[in-house]
Image (cartoon, rainbow, N blue to C red; front, side, top):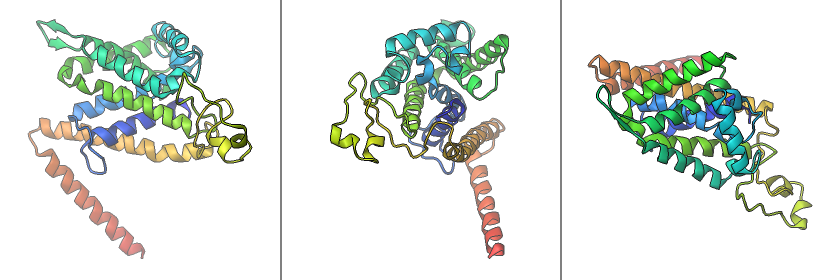
Length: 283
Protein backbone atom coordinates (compact mmCIF):
# COMPACT_ATOMS: atom_id res chain seq x y z
CA UNK A 1 0.00 0.00 0.00
CA UNK A 2 1.01 3.62 -0.46
CA UNK A 3 2.33 5.54 2.54
CA UNK A 4 -0.58 7.95 2.92
CA UNK A 5 -3.01 5.04 2.75
CA UNK A 6 -1.14 3.21 5.51
CA UNK A 7 -1.33 6.36 7.68
CA UNK A 8 -5.06 6.82 7.07
CA UNK A 9 -5.69 3.15 7.88
CA UNK A 10 -3.74 3.44 11.13
CA UNK A 11 -5.70 6.51 12.25
CA UNK A 12 -9.00 4.83 11.34
CA UNK A 13 -8.06 1.66 13.22
CA UNK A 14 -7.28 3.68 16.35
CA UNK A 15 -10.59 5.52 16.11
CA UNK A 16 -12.45 2.22 15.79
CA UNK A 17 -10.66 0.62 18.75
CA UNK A 18 -10.23 3.56 21.16
CA UNK A 19 -13.18 5.88 20.58
CA UNK A 20 -16.58 5.39 22.20
CA UNK A 21 -18.39 7.60 19.68
CA UNK A 22 -21.25 6.16 17.62
CA UNK A 23 -20.12 3.69 14.93
CA UNK A 24 -16.93 2.75 16.79
CA UNK A 25 -15.99 -0.44 18.65
CA UNK A 26 -14.67 1.09 21.87
CA UNK A 27 -12.56 -1.97 22.73
CA UNK A 28 -9.83 0.13 24.34
CA UNK A 29 -11.57 3.36 25.39
CA UNK A 30 -9.46 6.46 26.04
CA UNK A 31 -10.23 10.13 26.63
CA UNK A 32 -10.95 12.51 23.70
CA UNK A 33 -7.35 13.72 23.90
CA UNK A 34 -6.20 10.11 23.79
CA UNK A 35 -8.26 9.54 20.64
CA UNK A 36 -6.72 12.54 18.86
CA UNK A 37 -3.17 11.90 20.07
CA UNK A 38 -3.45 8.17 19.48
CA UNK A 39 -4.72 8.69 15.94
CA UNK A 40 -1.56 10.67 15.14
CA UNK A 41 0.70 8.13 16.79
CA UNK A 42 -1.09 5.13 15.26
CA UNK A 43 -0.94 6.76 11.82
CA UNK A 44 2.82 7.14 12.25
CA UNK A 45 3.16 3.60 13.58
CA UNK A 46 1.31 2.34 10.51
CA UNK A 47 4.26 3.67 8.52
CA UNK A 48 6.98 2.39 10.86
CA UNK A 49 7.43 -1.00 9.15
CA UNK A 50 8.62 0.86 6.05
CA UNK A 51 11.41 2.40 8.14
CA UNK A 52 13.52 -0.56 7.04
CA UNK A 53 14.56 1.27 3.86
CA UNK A 54 16.81 4.34 3.78
CA UNK A 55 15.15 5.58 0.57
CA UNK A 56 11.61 5.40 1.94
CA UNK A 57 9.65 8.66 2.11
CA UNK A 58 9.49 8.55 5.89
CA UNK A 59 13.28 8.20 6.08
CA UNK A 60 13.40 11.86 5.07
CA UNK A 61 10.60 12.96 7.40
CA UNK A 62 12.79 14.25 10.24
CA UNK A 63 16.37 14.52 8.97
CA UNK A 64 18.94 13.55 10.03
CA UNK A 65 17.38 11.57 12.91
CA UNK A 66 14.87 9.68 10.76
CA UNK A 67 17.60 8.70 8.30
CA UNK A 68 19.79 7.25 11.04
CA UNK A 69 16.85 5.42 12.62
CA UNK A 70 15.74 3.94 9.30
CA UNK A 71 19.26 2.77 8.46
CA UNK A 72 19.50 1.04 11.84
CA UNK A 73 16.08 -0.61 11.50
CA UNK A 74 16.95 -1.78 7.99
CA UNK A 75 20.06 -3.54 9.27
CA UNK A 76 18.24 -5.18 12.19
CA UNK A 77 15.31 -6.25 10.00
CA UNK A 78 17.44 -7.79 7.29
CA UNK A 79 16.48 -5.29 4.61
CA UNK A 80 13.25 -4.01 3.12
CA UNK A 81 10.04 -5.98 3.67
CA UNK A 82 11.62 -8.53 5.94
CA UNK A 83 11.60 -8.38 9.74
CA UNK A 84 9.45 -5.27 10.13
CA UNK A 85 6.69 -6.85 8.03
CA UNK A 86 6.27 -9.90 10.24
CA UNK A 87 4.57 -10.98 13.45
CA UNK A 88 7.95 -10.68 15.18
CA UNK A 89 8.31 -7.14 13.86
CA UNK A 90 4.90 -6.12 15.22
CA UNK A 91 5.88 -7.53 18.61
CA UNK A 92 9.23 -5.70 18.54
CA UNK A 93 7.59 -2.34 17.77
CA UNK A 94 5.09 -2.92 20.60
CA UNK A 95 7.77 -3.81 23.15
CA UNK A 96 9.86 -0.80 22.12
CA UNK A 97 6.87 1.49 22.66
CA UNK A 98 6.18 -0.08 26.06
CA UNK A 99 9.81 0.37 27.13
CA UNK A 100 9.80 4.00 25.97
CA UNK A 101 6.66 4.63 28.01
CA UNK A 102 8.53 3.68 31.20
CA UNK A 103 10.96 6.60 30.83
CA UNK A 104 9.59 9.62 32.70
CA UNK A 105 11.00 12.80 34.20
CA UNK A 106 9.70 14.62 37.29
CA UNK A 107 9.66 18.40 36.75
CA UNK A 108 8.63 21.18 39.14
CA UNK A 109 6.52 22.87 36.45
CA UNK A 110 4.58 20.06 34.75
CA UNK A 111 4.97 17.12 37.14
CA UNK A 112 5.84 13.77 35.55
CA UNK A 113 6.61 14.05 31.85
CA UNK A 114 6.56 10.99 29.61
CA UNK A 115 9.93 11.74 28.02
CA UNK A 116 10.44 8.35 26.38
CA UNK A 117 6.95 8.27 24.91
CA UNK A 118 7.35 11.87 23.78
CA UNK A 119 10.54 11.09 21.90
CA UNK A 120 8.93 8.10 20.18
CA UNK A 121 5.92 10.22 19.27
CA UNK A 122 8.13 12.92 17.70
CA UNK A 123 9.34 10.39 15.15
CA UNK A 124 5.94 8.77 14.60
CA UNK A 125 4.16 12.11 14.19
CA UNK A 126 6.85 13.13 11.69
CA UNK A 127 6.21 9.90 9.75
CA UNK A 128 2.48 10.62 9.59
CA UNK A 129 2.95 14.29 8.71
CA UNK A 130 5.33 13.44 5.88
CA UNK A 131 3.09 10.76 4.40
CA UNK A 132 -0.01 12.96 4.61
CA UNK A 133 1.80 16.00 3.19
CA UNK A 134 1.35 18.11 6.33
CA UNK A 135 4.98 19.12 6.88
CA UNK A 136 6.05 19.99 3.33
CA UNK A 137 9.64 19.60 2.18
CA UNK A 138 11.13 22.00 4.71
CA UNK A 139 13.41 20.42 7.33
CA UNK A 140 12.53 23.19 9.78
CA UNK A 141 8.82 22.73 9.11
CA UNK A 142 9.04 19.00 9.74
CA UNK A 143 10.86 19.46 13.04
CA UNK A 144 8.57 22.29 14.16
CA UNK A 145 5.38 20.36 13.52
CA UNK A 146 6.61 17.07 15.01
CA UNK A 147 8.10 18.64 18.15
CA UNK A 148 5.09 20.91 18.71
CA UNK A 149 2.55 18.09 18.49
CA UNK A 150 4.61 15.60 20.46
CA UNK A 151 5.45 18.22 23.08
CA UNK A 152 1.80 19.11 23.49
CA UNK A 153 0.89 15.47 23.97
CA UNK A 154 3.75 14.86 26.40
CA UNK A 155 2.78 17.80 28.62
CA UNK A 156 -0.99 17.48 28.54
CA UNK A 157 -1.43 13.71 28.68
CA UNK A 158 1.41 12.12 30.67
CA UNK A 159 -0.96 9.84 32.55
CA UNK A 160 -2.45 8.48 29.34
CA UNK A 161 0.68 7.02 27.79
CA UNK A 162 -0.42 3.53 28.83
CA UNK A 163 -2.09 3.42 25.41
CA UNK A 164 1.19 4.02 23.53
CA UNK A 165 2.17 0.34 22.99
CA UNK A 166 -1.41 -0.43 21.97
CA UNK A 167 -1.38 2.36 19.37
CA UNK A 168 2.06 1.41 18.05
CA UNK A 169 1.30 -2.32 17.91
CA UNK A 170 -2.05 -1.66 16.24
CA UNK A 171 -0.47 0.66 13.68
CA UNK A 172 2.28 -1.83 12.82
CA UNK A 173 -0.29 -4.62 12.49
CA UNK A 174 -2.46 -2.49 10.21
CA UNK A 175 0.56 -1.88 7.97
CA UNK A 176 1.36 -5.59 7.71
CA UNK A 177 -2.28 -6.45 6.96
CA UNK A 178 -2.43 -3.68 4.35
CA UNK A 179 0.62 -5.03 2.54
CA UNK A 180 -0.80 -8.54 2.75
CA UNK A 181 -3.76 -7.32 0.72
CA UNK A 182 -1.46 -6.45 -2.20
CA UNK A 183 0.22 -8.83 -4.64
CA UNK A 184 3.66 -8.54 -3.02
CA UNK A 185 2.58 -10.00 0.30
CA UNK A 186 4.69 -10.09 3.47
CA UNK A 187 7.10 -12.54 5.18
CA UNK A 188 4.65 -13.03 8.04
CA UNK A 189 6.71 -15.72 9.82
CA UNK A 190 10.14 -14.07 9.39
CA UNK A 191 12.92 -15.10 10.05
CA UNK A 192 11.36 -18.40 9.01
CA UNK A 193 10.35 -18.03 5.36
CA UNK A 194 8.94 -21.39 4.31
CA UNK A 195 8.63 -22.04 0.57
CA UNK A 196 5.44 -23.65 -0.71
CA UNK A 197 5.62 -27.17 -2.14
CA UNK A 198 5.88 -27.52 -5.90
CA UNK A 199 2.29 -28.70 -6.33
CA UNK A 200 1.04 -25.57 -4.49
CA UNK A 201 2.97 -23.28 -6.84
CA UNK A 202 1.27 -24.87 -9.83
CA UNK A 203 -2.21 -23.79 -8.68
CA UNK A 204 -3.14 -20.35 -10.15
CA UNK A 205 -4.98 -19.07 -7.06
CA UNK A 206 -2.98 -20.79 -4.32
CA UNK A 207 0.35 -19.49 -5.59
CA UNK A 208 -0.90 -15.93 -5.08
CA UNK A 209 -1.60 -16.62 -1.39
CA UNK A 210 1.60 -18.46 -0.48
CA UNK A 211 4.21 -17.11 -2.82
CA UNK A 212 7.35 -18.85 -4.07
CA UNK A 213 9.61 -16.54 -2.05
CA UNK A 214 7.85 -17.42 1.22
CA UNK A 215 5.57 -14.38 1.46
CA UNK A 216 1.88 -14.63 2.34
CA UNK A 217 -0.82 -12.53 0.68
CA UNK A 218 -4.55 -12.09 0.17
CA UNK A 219 -4.16 -9.80 -2.86
CA UNK A 220 -7.70 -8.42 -3.05
CA UNK A 221 -6.32 -4.91 -3.69
CA UNK A 222 -3.99 -5.96 -6.51
CA UNK A 223 -0.76 -4.02 -6.92
CA UNK A 224 0.14 -1.21 -4.51
CA UNK A 225 -1.50 2.06 -5.57
CA UNK A 226 -4.21 0.31 -7.58
CA UNK A 227 -7.68 1.72 -8.22
CA UNK A 228 -9.08 -0.78 -5.73
CA UNK A 229 -6.74 0.54 -3.06
CA UNK A 230 -7.87 4.12 -3.73
CA UNK A 231 -11.52 3.05 -3.56
CA UNK A 232 -10.88 1.41 -0.19
CA UNK A 233 -8.97 4.32 1.35
CA UNK A 234 -11.64 6.99 0.72
CA UNK A 235 -14.15 5.66 3.31
CA UNK A 236 -11.26 4.75 5.60
CA UNK A 237 -9.97 8.33 5.54
CA UNK A 238 -13.46 9.74 6.08
CA UNK A 239 -13.96 7.43 9.05
CA UNK A 240 -10.69 8.55 10.63
CA UNK A 241 -11.65 12.19 10.11
CA UNK A 242 -15.05 11.54 11.67
CA UNK A 243 -13.56 9.90 14.77
CA UNK A 244 -10.99 12.63 15.37
CA UNK A 245 -13.61 15.32 14.75
CA UNK A 246 -15.98 13.78 17.29
CA UNK A 247 -13.18 13.52 19.85
CA UNK A 248 -12.34 17.21 19.42
CA UNK A 249 -16.02 18.13 19.70
CA UNK A 250 -16.41 16.08 22.89
CA UNK A 251 -13.36 17.75 24.39
CA UNK A 252 -14.70 21.22 23.61
CA UNK A 253 -18.19 20.44 24.91
CA UNK A 254 -16.81 18.97 28.12
CA UNK A 255 -14.58 22.00 28.71
CA UNK A 256 -17.72 24.17 28.39
CA UNK A 257 -19.44 22.15 31.10
CA UNK A 258 -21.93 20.48 28.75
CA UNK A 259 -22.99 16.84 28.64
CA UNK A 260 -21.08 15.75 25.55
CA UNK A 261 -22.74 12.32 25.38
CA UNK A 262 -26.22 13.84 25.41
CA UNK A 263 -25.31 16.38 22.73
CA UNK A 264 -23.79 13.72 20.46
CA UNK A 265 -26.73 11.39 20.98
CA UNK A 266 -29.12 14.16 20.01
CA UNK A 267 -27.01 14.93 16.95
CA UNK A 268 -27.12 11.28 15.86
CA UNK A 269 -30.89 11.19 16.34
CA UNK A 270 -31.38 14.31 14.23
CA UNK A 271 -29.02 13.02 11.54
CA UNK A 272 -30.82 9.68 11.44
CA UNK A 273 -34.16 11.43 11.10
CA UNK A 274 -32.89 13.59 8.24
CA UNK A 275 -31.40 10.59 6.43
CA UNK A 276 -34.63 8.65 6.90
CA UNK A 277 -36.70 11.54 5.59
CA UNK A 278 -34.50 11.93 2.51
CA UNK A 279 -34.63 8.19 1.84
CA UNK A 280 -38.42 8.09 2.20
CA UNK A 281 -38.76 11.10 -0.07
CA UNK A 282 -36.55 9.45 -2.67
CA UNK A 283 -38.75 6.35 -2.60
